[in-house]
Image 1 (tube, rainbow, N blue to C red):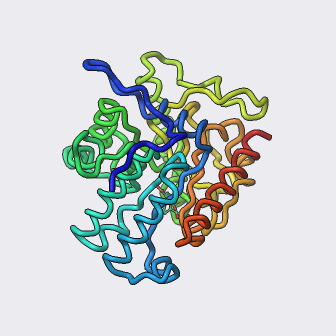
Image 2 (cartoon, rainbow, N blue to C red; image 1 turned 90 degrees about the vertical axis):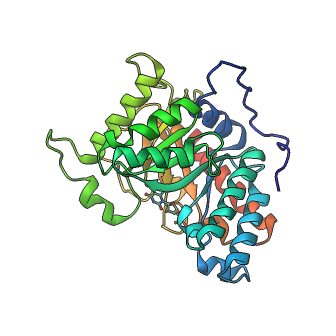
Length: 316
Ligand SMILES: O=C(O)c1cc(=O)[nH]c(=O)n1[C@@H]1O[C@H](COP(=O)(O)O)[C@@H](O)[C@H]1O
């Protein structure tokens, strides 16, 4: 089911032989600018399959995923398939995920595979190979990773991503209430654990930029209406459900913000939570869009409505 890039696709300049691939952060900024600031999660929950009139089986998974990709991949900036819902069906579920990633990418969406992987470094290298190695069946534009085995254990994924023009979204402050007991804990140096993670994210982007300045440090000027600045390729996950971040956000890092819709957050919450960094936020919604299916027009209208809402609040 692979297709030619659709009109309006944020085309990347093709790297010539011997040149580095365009970094994920640059590709993400272009996608957000051209398609609008929204990530739609592909989460084929059993309840959603039922609501769509599909069985909680491989055929249902396949039809749900194909319909979502067909409806949205030529228009939303980012699609984020949640790996667990595919893994439930074993190897055949993974094959559905493989096709979804390839089809969504060829229709011009950036794909962040939500795998939340994290392990000792040597195993992390295998995860990096799975999601961030060109030619791998699950090759994605970016992947979500967990730093809670130590940020340094993510090194193979960070290096592989940089080498291939991919991104990594590191869990920092998750949208679920249980996250606080770990993420708000105080590290040995007095910072919160989440702050320590966010500072490492900033350092990664600064190192990739080749100097000590953080990319986009002066760019995210939501309050004054100037264009948003460049984005780094190492992002952080900061839940949109939080009342306040209570941290220094890494300037110029993309901030994946799940929790819009079913978890209770709304686009209107974003400016207060993120301040000027709102221009670097990639708000993410899964059930809040998917519940409008299976009608493709319903899915598109829901995504468009949310995109417009985010644009409006980010420009205010
Ligand atoms: O990394 C994520 O995407 C993620 C991080 C987080 O802090 N909270 C969170 O909900 N997510 C994911 O985002 C999606 C949220 O789905 P909805 O609540 O249906 O919009 C799920 O796939 C979650 O696994």
